[in-house]
Amino acid sequence: MKHIYFVAETKGSMSTMQLRMVEEAKIHCAREHFKAISTDSVVYDVADSYAALLSKVMS
Image (tube, rainbow, N blue to C red; front, side):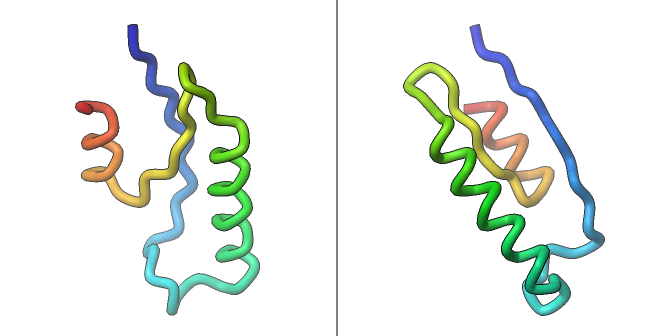
């Protein structure tokens, strides 16, 4: 059985030109945190668009 939990943080744009350095650092830390807590049976990941989320859900 597969479960997907979704937490959203909206910014208006994911363009790095529009993200402040603090926001970029938060995203980097979140990615590293998700990588560290993932296991063979539970995988945490980041989706930066609805299409990316849908792709992860459907795989």
